[in-house]
Length: 445
Image (cartoon, rainbow, N blue to C red):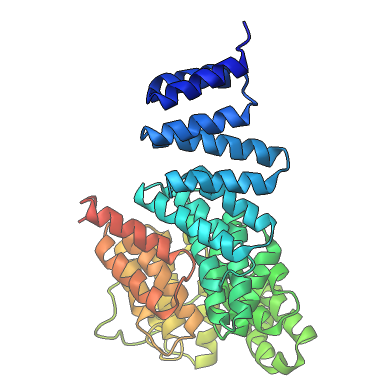
């Protein structure tokens, strides 16, 4: 049976005058349940709840009325009821959130910022991490947001928003940093974005270009490819050097030939690196290359390699250079005592010490002679005269090898040195965090 509104309201008002608030609330509840669109009755009910100290129910009634008005397009009335809810509970999540959204729609960003900051404080007090992240992301999206506000939004999004959305927030922060004249910081932020969206070639190219433009080209290593380097001579040269260090001669040759085509100012440097590669191609087309070892006195501090080989007399340095390059490409399955002896002897030559030590370390690791491989990589990493990018690669391989042989403390030390020399190199920050967790949990000694 339908509730008679007029009689019910009169009865409720009489009960209020008699001080029987609880009974009056019951009358209004019957009316609101029967006629949910009766805003006047809902407002009276909210007032009664506030009068008896039931703040939660009072706020619920006022916010619901505000929602009804907003859905109907009566925004001023909606704002009035949301603000009425805030008078009862100044930290009402729903009221603050709705007022902030209305302010954004009206382009009143100062008001929106005020409401969201109040909401942020409330959620922090409640230890509502997801809610805090949502507030920070909203603040970062306002046109008035600073670069630091946008970075805070991106950091907060991690773990609460999808990876693609978080990456977009990092890119937004990078744009703001560049506009603010802080390009080096923008590189760090772009690297964060690219780590979340590894398939975005345009983003990876932007990272590589930003690294080069800010004098941090060594940090571009993880993002370099022919597609991301494009026709940038500096990026192609970096790609070629990394390919040479990793023994990928064909890739290096291709990159260097492209440099000669598109960057005349770097032609001389490119041809200098390209000449030995062309000589190798000529050798492969002629007689079979014989890998010999050669006699050089072993340095007192050189790591011992348990291999014996017959070694011929020393040869001229150009011959030694060619041989080290050939030995470096020998697959682990085909390596023999002569191969190891050749690299060991070449490591005594100051001109070849870094490359030979690094290649020998890699070869020994592939042969499952981990301890010896670690010693040779460590020796290569200590040669400060090496090309910086190549030395950073060796330091990374050394730390990785130390972790694999069960020496996390030393691995963490090497990763820390690498992070100091080149912040955010590859995945070093993540590797360091993982090692620290393992050590703190007692999972490693």
